[in-house]
Every structure is written in structure tokens, then in C-alpha cells.
Length: 416
Ligand SMILES: [Zn+2]
Image (spheres, protein in one colour):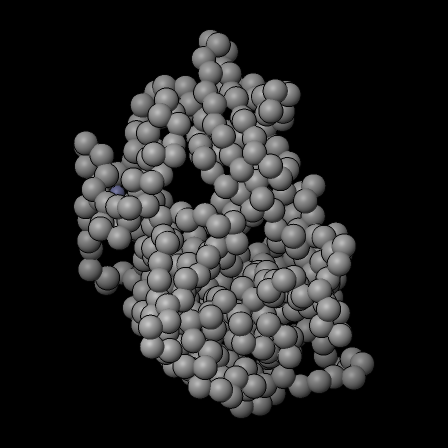
């Protein structure tokens, strides 16, 4: 039994999706205090890098594995409901009360086994239907070991844990490298030549290190830790769960029949791609500077973005303090984030004042930041010429872009 860390977060989001939330729902990543079952005691979750990112769509909050929005979400849907869902998904050892676990349940404070985690993730891979795992000693020649629901056999005790729609959303988010880029960068052990839904986790004080993921055909779970529960020493991405997961998933998929490029979970017919404002997650108005698309229910009521106006952003009250603090921190000469339609030469990625987190489970040399500007540019990082793919290095960095006309822009980032 070990703390699963962030690998439990998808189940909180799955519960919220069952209750009417969508991947476009905005969650608050701001300093927050949540009441606990103990009178007068409040819970103050923190993100790994100590920063806050303001409003985050559920897609980004889950993919980037932010702690504060996950706790905010659990405070809305309730630990008792999450506990019921987790037990239904196969976590049979969560026998204490919801009050005992509290909001830390979503951050993986309670202990589970690797077998239970793999069973629960396989539920998403099967479109929300859970199965009871069977242990196999060796392999049977009569059928491939990784075949999905072999003909003529029904899984033991099948049951629906979440809807097909929820399983599709969770899978679509966990297999979206763009959605996790703002925290994890691109490349590395989480990316494959075929769709893979994947989540990493570490327990407190780095005792345990997990990577769990699935395709349509296989679910793979890796735990790295010491059997005597001592902390991992000298363990980096090179020796953590990520590289093991990568190698096992590639081998398992070769065995299951090669690179499967079909969707992991079939998209339900009642979801359609709809435009949303990148910031508010609502239907874009003409003032929204940046739009994206999201899979949303065809019959959902349309609500237009009321955050963006020609004169700027009118923040909902819960974000005002965060927005004001960010404004004070930002370099006053830097372009305002709210102005995105001008033709001024500027750096579009990374954003100024961004903090990136090096995932200890990934090969660091493969975690790169894509440097981008509004026009072709040459790049200088910390005074030295740099390629457009800049490998993340911990520390504070100054990034300067210069275009052909000699115009220049500069951003400051922190990598932890
Ligand atoms: Zn907007």
C-alpha cells in the first residue's frame, strides 16, 4: 500500500464530469482555504511550484496536474461521492470514512496498490466499464495476452463506473500533450507514436514515483520506490517510473498488434467540437483574444464570455486579487496579456513571468520549451544563442527574441 499522489486526480475530475462539469469548466487556481471536518481547521493546498495560475479550464488543470483546482473541485463534488466512485473503480482498501480522508483524497494521500490503480485506469480505457483483474502466470498460447475483451468471455463482475462521455473526456485530456505543455513541456516519456492517456504521480517526500497510462489495447502501471519505504535517493527521470513506463508501453503495444492510431475511447455522438474562449471556457465573444475548441454536449446551453471587453478583462470576483497581484509582478513594459491582436513583434511562448516545472519522472534532456514569437526570430537565452527548442534548465532565465528588422522582445521565466 502506497500513496498514489497525483495519479488519483483523474477520478475527481471524472466525478465532476458525471455531475455536469465539462473540460471547459473554469476552476480557480488561486490561494484558497477550505474548511475541513475538524471544526476551525482549514486546508490550504499548494501547487508543486508554489505558484498560482488563476482561472484554469478543467482540461488544463488536470493535464498540468495542479493541486489547488483539484482540491477546489473536490470541495464542490464532495469527498463522500469521490470515495464511492473510487471504491467502485476497485480501490477496496479505502475503508475509512470520507471525513478521515478529507480533501487530501484527491491529491493521493490515502494508500492504494499498483494493482488497484491499474484496474481503475483500465475502467477509463474500457469506456467506463470496470473489470476485475485476473492474475496470469505465464501466457496462454490460445490468445494474445493483451487482447481486449476476448471473444466468448465476459469480464468478471463487469459494471459501469462512469459514463462513456466521462471516460472519453478523461482519456482525451490525459492523451493531450498540448494541454500538459504549460507544466511539463513537450517530448519525453509521456509521448508516443500513437495515442496514450497517461498520468504521473509522486508521493510526499519522493518516496514513490508512479506512471500509469493506457491505450485501447493495454493499460500499463509502473511504481518505483523502496520496499522498506525509505525515500528514493539519487533518483531522477532517468531511473524513475517514466522511462520504464515508456519502454513497457512500446513493447506491450508491439505485442498487442503494433501502433494503434484509432481513438482510445470512442467519442459519444452527442459531443461536438465547439469554439470556446481560452480564458473563460465560455462561447467566445468578439472581444475574446484567443479561442480554442472543446468537445461539448450538443444540447448544452450557450453562454457567451462576459470576461473580455474591448477595454480589458472584467475578472469574476474570485480572480481579482490574483489578477492584481500578477499585474504588479509583470514587467510593466511587457505587452499586456489582454492585447493579443496587435501586430507588434513579441514573444508568444513562453509567456512572461511563467514558471515551468521539471517533471522528475521525465528525461530532462527531452523536456524542451518551444520558443515562439509573432515573426521569425533569432533567440538568445541568458546571453547565449539558443535553438527554438530550448531544453528546460532549472533556474531563472531571460529569453530575448530579435526579428529581421532588429525589433526585440524579452521575457523572464523560472524553471523549477
Ligand atoms: Zn473571453
